[in-house]
Amino acid sequence: MLRLELTGIRKEYPGVCANDNVSLAVAPGEIHAVLGENGAGKSTLMKIIYGAVRPDAGSIRWNGELVGISSPEVARSLGIAMVFQHFSLFETLSVAENVWLGQRGSERLGELTARIQAASKSYGLELDPERPVHTLSVGERQRVEIVRALLMHPKLLILDEPTSVLTPQAVQKLFATLRELAETGCSILYISHKLDEIRQLCSRCTVLRGGRVTGVLDPRGETEQTLSRLMIGSEPPRLDRGAAEFGGAALVVAGLGVKPSAPFGTELANVSFTLHAGEILGVAGVSGNGQNELLEVLSGENPSASRGSIALFGTDITGRPPRARRQLGLHYVPEERLGRAAAPSLSLAENTLLTRHEPVGRAGFIDRARLSRLAERVIARFQVKAPSADAAAASLSGGNLQKFIVGREIDAKPKLLIAAQPTWGVDAGAAAQIRAQLLELKRAGSAVLVVSEDLEELWQICDSLVVMARGRLSPRVPIGAVTPTQIGEWMSGLWPSENAEAQVA
Image (cartoon, rainbow, N blue to C red; front, side, top):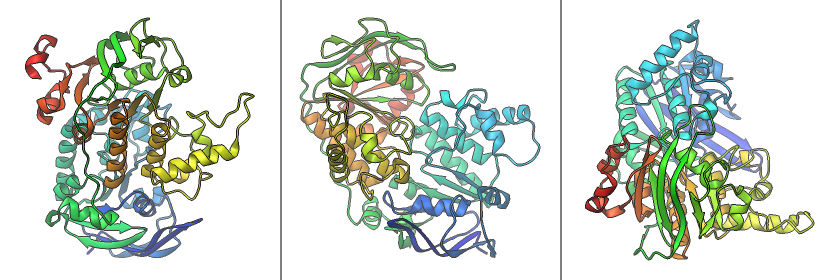
């Protein structure tokens, strides 16, 4: 008997059919992947299964019986748990309180706190149950979502891009946990754009393109190229990092030491590095080790850095607000799409104004026509799937919104671009496109700082790497002089001394 069977599912939104006659079958103990490019209808289908979205047509059978899943509460009562791509956490509550709200039964908060500590350690997804969610990085919030779902002991676990901001070590630990769950009979629906993960973890996959099923197959017998062709109709473009031809110093950080701006944050200690024009420098590390604090200081959100510790093209920018830094050529892509990089209820055109002020005249009036043209140019250049520049940011899929945000900043032709998790949640083709644009920026003479937990990404585009651990920065190493295994070890803070840097390089 099948655990879950969908037949003829259809869901339409104004101007788009997200799911068109979709059928899906999942057996008990099966790890089943759902593949597709951004906007293919994967997340909509998962929300239908979880009761967050009602289908317009079609049927759902659970353990052979016809059911109507009218809400997430009904889904949870059946034993369905879901980890969303866009997190569903209350920012003002603690980790334990967020997990507690999602649990069924009468377990006390104190008992649950102890269970969270034990489970997160066992799963390799370390969490502090007492921390407020608003103090967590994206990677840490991802851990909260995963642990919360696992603690429900579900019969069907839906994972929407669960590893997008996890380190390789955490990914392997999660995979081991998922295999153990599957052995107990738990079914798993797994969405990821990382095709190597699909081939490594899943025994069957359903491929969606344009809201329709284009194939059901065993990914273990396929190559990443054949899976990519099924998803997007072609293989992702190959990236050429090219020879490193550095110019003058663009960003110089010297002896930066900053107290965290929020409780439970990480203190930065003597952080120093130089980023040159025409260079891409990658910052690797486990979430919560000071990356957020570094980004806040560099972007101008936290102005508490001591004078002389941050220089942009020879100008001391400590104490200068974000807009003044943009005027000097610094643009920034935050890791949080909704709420930081984009206002959900505003249109794409209106969101363009958050960092692009070309359509604003001297008297403060907005040239609406010019604003629309600017947004439409970004949409076209980065192949964002959106009805128009008037579409609300929240109406786009996560990957398409990410393409728009990154495109908005790259289109500004920055002299220095700081990008946090630039390809989080985007499909293989879109990720290759974004990375190619970052390389193009570099070739045009811009400096690029990429903070990412995706080591494959860093290896593809970076000239050099540093690792951040416990608020400290490792020595810089050329990308060809170190292995992913070594970088994984450095993430725990175990790296050679500064004097040994030359030997490592």
